[in-house]
Length: 394
Image (tube, rainbow, N blue to C red; front, top):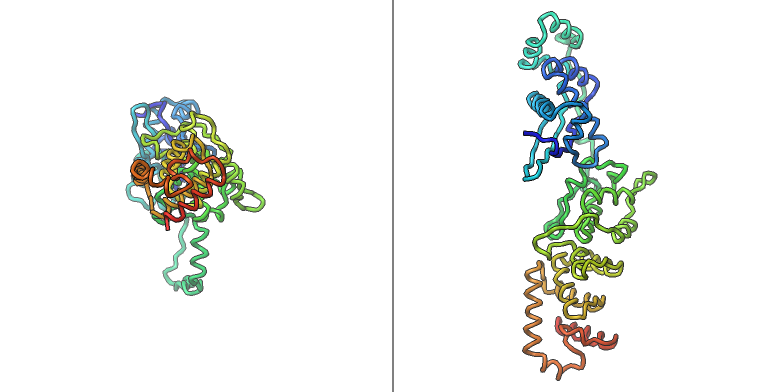
């Protein structure tokens, strides 16, 4: 049973034209009732201005109908193929997605054996005949004529591989290659759903830009709704362009309004993970840039970056030294560390090696093992460590 506190979101499958609106008011309304028609028209207007899910209490207030009346009207729309409803249940409240379909045109309605008979049942035969004569279009007799309409010639397109590549580059696409997609945790469908071309120009929705948006969202923990606002601030109506540099700057300045919840802490967005490791203190812009570079430039998975950050903080007196972090990141990248479990195993190996070889390493090296970075006191020692790491990897 529908409840007032339940949530709904509307999608329009096809916009009505004038003929279909006439069909809705003159042909459907006698069958489904005025309450169902009012609900249908209200949902169409509401979706034009909605930003996300709304409570059914909103419809109750607007329509001045009870929740039971709205539920009955919804089901009448569903019966006559004007609405498709999807529901997701939860303990507190359910969520509905309502997909609106355009009514049949007047001609199609009258040609439908079921719908036309239903209409005559709800109207008397005289009113049905009046309605039919008013709305049906007169047809021309073409029996003695030959159809000479020119057919579309596919070969006239002159489409080549270069055209195809150009077309794919601007066609909205967010199903990337598996090696790229695996580290993106972002709901593209929710982000693009009803997203205006003014907020994000269609021509700018390339695979490259969409991938960047997903990666930035994963790093900083930006929700699809907040990302829509962020992207809108970086899109120009005048030029129709998406400013990538401005987007990255605004993302770094972004402060999440909601706490990201994740049972596995290594699956948290990188910025949220680092903030949790420093007792809730906001992450500096320098550290944000470092995390971004580790994911975007050095191609480490966010969960691997989180293990790396934890390891560095634990062994380097809670300090993140860029050169030191990058050198370990390079090592892990060359070793092909793909997930947090492999990263944890690598850390465990470092710790075991430190116990068994620490004395031997001190005799052979002036600089300490990079698993003991707390002994790094100056830039010269740091350079020694980096040179040693290069030899170890090679």
